[in-house]
Amino acid sequence: MELVEKADNAQAELLMHFEEKINRGDAIEPKDRMPDGYRKHLIRQMSQHAHSEVIGMQPEGNWITRAPSLRAKQILLAKIQDEGGHGLYLYSAAETLGISRDEMIDLLHSGKAKYSSIFNYPTLTWADIGAIGWLVDGAAIVNQVSLQRTSYGPYSRAMVRICKEESFHQRQGYEIMAKMMKGTKDQQEMAQDAMNRWWWPSLMMFGPHDSESPRSSDAVKWKIKRHTNDELRQKFIDKTVQQAEVIGLTIPDNDLNWNETTGHYDHGPINWDEFHRVINGNGPCNKQRMDHHKKVHQDGAWVRAAAEAYRQKKEKQSLN
Amino acid sequence: MATDTQFPLWEVFIQSKSGANYIHAGSVHAADSNMALQNARDTYTRRGEGTSIWVVPTAAIVASNPDDNDMFFDPANDKVYRHPTFYVMPEGAKAI
Ligand SMILES: [Fe+2]
Ligand SMILES: [Fe+2]
Image (tube, rainbow over the protein chains, first blue to last red):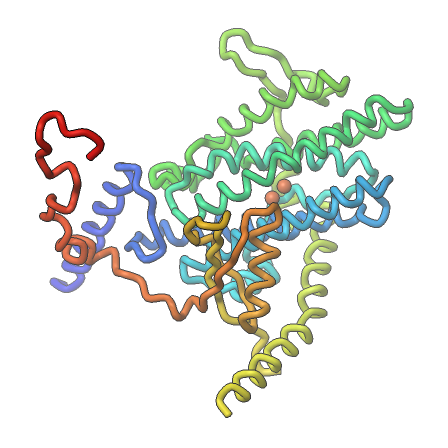
């Protein structure tokens, strides 16, 4: 009994010190003591973030061979390579919390770890590549700019690095959309169609409304999250509406209105049934995305085996 | 095949321009030092961020324990005479 009490006291003290540190605005580093809940929350969020970067390469990769010019192909390749890099920064940061890369991949493959549901939508036309860069990366940037000030040091540093690279992603997407809106009637319609299909899923990227997201209170208290889902979503809407107007695209929301009193745009209801359907595995491309990831991982096994054999051979040689 | 690992972990340090300090950038997985250097280049220097890269096996790094900070850094805490502002300079002396 007494032992249990002592352990409880130690836990409470640890938590108190930890929260004092957070409140002072200090960063938490890998070797610092941290509550289990903090570590778990970060592992879930950071691995999910890493998986999203990597799975996000698929819908765009779909258009590399069909990019309309050499310039467009080079840009798209560089953009997708960046996303792979973002995944690696984030896996590397998550590993500092004591989870291995293998475990994270296993959790993804077994379906226990999620990735952003936006990547379960198909890229049907070239305009979708524009819409992804402009809207999907645009939404991701709003989130990632906020996360630059997250309390966990390695996560925050990865975000700073990522944000430096993201602005090119958004600009190349917006450029595609702007070009199509200056093109033929067919091209304009294609751009508007992509806008219509990507707008709402982009808003869903910020997650459920604050009133419905159960885990966010600890995340806010521990400064993992610096802004709420609704705050970030609003920021994204407010800056995107004007960009759409400039190039003549219509935002597919009849309830979208400038609100003088709040100084923000009001928007119509988000289809959360769709959001949950897609997150729970029933979006248009969930199966395809996971199958592809597993296949590539398995196909690469011989490369890893060969590199490992080479390492062992070299190790033996250096011993002789 | 026994284990399909992602290889050992290496910490990456990058010098942004000649003469600058090497700064920790993150980590990579690699089977050997060559592969670690190449992976570090592809992962952390896609935009001319570096003129030089160090990779170090993560297992070879020894780190201080933050729980011991008070005791560990204590020897420096009471030595104000290590700072130039400790000294009283004669009135009128210049460029010192
Ligand atoms: Fe990214
Ligand atoms: Fe991006």
